[in-house]
Image (cartoon, rainbow, N blue to C red; front, side, top):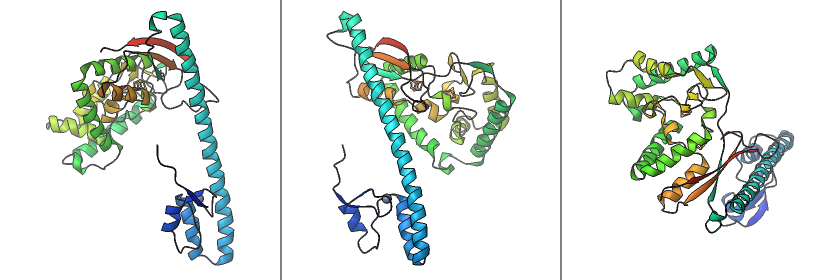
Length: 313
Ligand code: SF4
Ligand code: SF4
Ligand SMILES: [Zn+2]
């Protein structure tokens, strides 16, 4: 937990607390503001605008910033309420499970909340296929245009490459953890793949890796690898490569994002495992939401499955 900063004053724009440390950094300035970039920008206008114009701008921008902050606060209350209600419900599910299975009373399984992948299946629409093809052509060209990955922009795909290496090392040292992760992902049916859309997170990094391993590869051969892997039917509203039985792409063709991403629940379990603190069993409480739309509805997401999973020790 972060130590609480003492409130020294209030922001002249949005009325949020300003700590003593922050106030000292602004010593000599006519308006004391919080760390919000917009509040700082509005306060900065004072030096550039005539007083009357500044006051009009200040009042207008202040209202806008306050409205935004209220919207953010309302969103946070909504998220907190759902998290709290679902956690309470999960706790009740666990208590009921233990009441029904006396053999687990002495050492109850640990709760593990999972989302769900989408369910409908449909042949890939031509518009989606064309978007995917276009995305592939772009990233293949980017990969061909650079000498190595260091020439590529440092973005989420670069970070994902570092994360994938860590995940690979973790799984190499703990093969059983990879099996457990795969088992849980299969049960979830790709709750995080729901956002793969027509890009499948593929980037020039993924393609460059293949080119480094096979320098004679041509753009067309790489493109065909991906197009030929497409399933006859994909899960609707999810990644083009997602099917009822999982992802059709072999691991080596998947993006680093796909090969390294794990939802919060699995990441927590993996951390515990690596620290030698994994539970003997988890009670998986699966809900109907995907990994990305948990807070889009009015209230809690319904439970769609409760399963006990023993973890190898
Ligand atoms: S990482 Fe989490 S959300 Fe993604 S498939 Fe696995 S269990 Fe589901
Ligand atoms: S490529 Fe596979 S793992 Fe990646 S988002 Fe699509 S279905 Fe999921
Ligand atoms: Zn402010």
